[in-house]
Length: 356
View 1 (cartoon, rainbow, N blue to C red):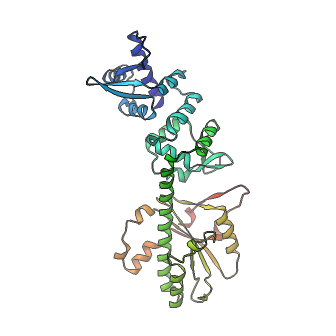
View 2: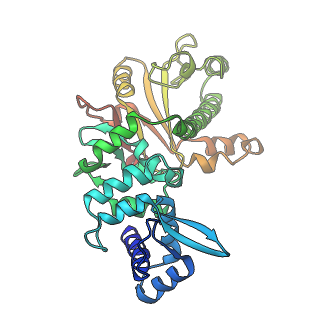
View 3: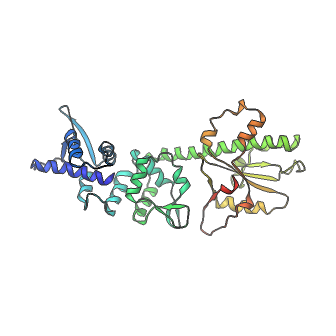
């Protein structure tokens, strides 16, 4: 896609030169004649100039101007600078890739998907990293943006790990962008956080409703009443103590003392049907601590496909149907996760295949 954009720029320049124009005005060509040139002289299977041309506009390498009932395609200053770097019209140099990322992509609404990809990466031992499951879950990463990321070489897979990293060639640009994000990009950040939080809140809501139904069948009336008190919206542990390491308090069985809840539940949710979740180092340390306590259980309730599940009105279901619907995709005793702590790890990726 981007190599083809180089051809567009060269076609515009060659057309201007053919007129022997000595004007200092930017090179331009009537859009109709540009497309005729491209389809007649640059015909090649797989090239769709009608899709490539808008990308050049979004990158700001060209612009359009209507004059006298004609539409002209004009090379911008960025386009001239980028074209001057061309060594081979079919390849891209590192210099060109860096130029596009820094000057034409980062911070631009036309490339929200790529900006979200960069924003979602976090610093790790391999530089700026992203879990592959998170990469698949990016909302605005279109096929076009995926292709641009590939052509720029903006990600490389970390050997023997379920991660991708931004190559060192771009690390300084990404670091500078992350450190100096302006206020315009803050709403995008807030929107992504809000979406993430909505998934977590819905998963937590499902877990509370599921556990309540479970206790009605397997606990006592007093336990259900205490459960409702402990897990009300105003009193739930996730609100009272965000560092508790779990989200819901419950009871193991009918013999559990009402005054001493002995079942912790940490809730994890995924927007789509992704077979993994992310857990923080703090949650892992708390989980290890709780799971070693006598007469206490620490569980992970994992929900996936939240985006689809939240559209169902469970009020129309009977108790059995509700319980089936609300049951987690995986209920995992924490000790079975077998997470090995590492010194500098902030987060861990947990695959759930064996638990589903």
